[in-house]
Each structure stands twice: as C-alpha cells, then as structure tokens.
Image (cartoon, rainbow, N blue to C red):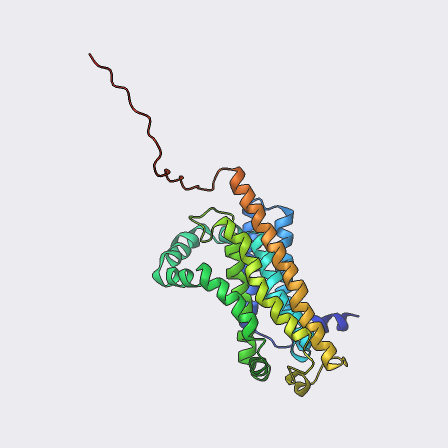
Length: 292
C-alpha cells in the first residue's frame, strides 16, 4: 500500500528549482499565517492551488501528462487557469510578506521592490495589455502541433512551456482579481469583469477546432507512446472538450469574482467617478448684485 502511494508522490522528473520555490512559498505562508488573521476559506484556496501545482509538475502524474493529449490538457488547465485563480483569490501577498522577518523586509524586500529592474519587470508583465495577450497567446502557441512536438521532444522546452503557462496565469488573474480601485490598480473594475469573456473566446474557438478535427493533430503522443489505449481521435476530442468547457467555466467564475470586487468597491464609495462635463448652451444663473 505504502509503495503504491509513494509511486504517485515521487516526481517523474525531479527539479530542485521547482522544489525550492514551492517550499519557500509554503514556509513563508505558514509563518505569515501565524502573524496575520487569515480566514479558513482563504487558506483552503491557497493550499488547494499549491497542491494542484505540485501534482501537475512534480509527481508521477507528469508521466501521463507527457504521454496522453487529453491528460496534457488537464495539466494546462490546472496550471494556467484553476491553480493561479485559487491562489490569487486567496490574496496571499500580505501573508507571504509577513512570513519574512522584519529585518529582511526592510533591508532586502523593500530595496528590491524599489529597484528599477523590478519596476521594469512588473511594468511589462503586469501591463494589462501584455498580460492579457500573453495569457491567450501561450494557450494558442502550445496548441500548434509543431510547437507541441518540440515541447515533448526537449525537456527544456517542456519545462518552459509549463512555467510560461503558470506565470502568465498568475499575472493575468492578479490583474483581474485586484481588490483595489484604479489607481492604484492597473485595470478598471469594469474591465476586470469583461476581460475573462474576451480571453475566453479564442480559447473556445481553438478547443472547438481540436474537438471536431477528423485527423490526428498531435502524432507526437503516438511516437512517444500513449499512456492509455484510447482511440486517437477520441482522446483528441476529450482534450478539445477539456480546454473548451472547463476552461470557459473557470474564466466565468473569475469574471464573477471580479464583479463581486466591483460591487464591493462601489458600495464602499472607492470608485472614482469622473465629473460630468457641462452641457453646451446651458444657461447660468445670473448673480444678483446689491446696488446702493
């Protein structure tokens, strides 16, 4: 029994970099949770998202993700949509910062956040247009059969593919689920609600193309050896449906969460409304002047 459990926990391809980042984030969150009051719901969202990332990248499941198209689509939906959405929805930033000792926050974190490389990096990656384009582009790029073949044949490209999906997911959902008004938020509350509907459309179209295709678009999985004995077109159809329906549902949930934040900001009066311009030709009330 124990041996069968360990088989699934042991990573298919071990990565010190991933393990170091994962453990560091987990330790910081635990330490920060002791110094801040964090609701059970937020903690559950964070740890479920972290568990999804670990299962997708550092367990034996990665073998099936590499050897079956529909399993690979499950991995990408988890990395690109669901796990980042859950973690960002838990708003872990303040908890992670509190996990650092005060001296580290003052001497290390603050100078880094004020440095020009970090400001340039965040200005590009967290630009609403750039983040939205990358969020959609990475889904479509890795669906191109030739790009999928390259990723499956070279472990370095494969890892870059997975990290690109994860990072673009985090940057996009960070913008959409931002709980602040604009400014300092980078997107207006209304655009945060509309954005998932915009990014959802090309993904639905791509999923429909894969679903209804009558030819094997990804023969690389046949070359590498399929993990299951599914019919090739059946497995491809299932993969297309996974990126079509569940991904669209997750983005719809993200839009609803953004609407919830919009309503909260509106009720608290934190949304700045531009003053209405005066109408042309509007009569002004004459000012009476007292005469002697």
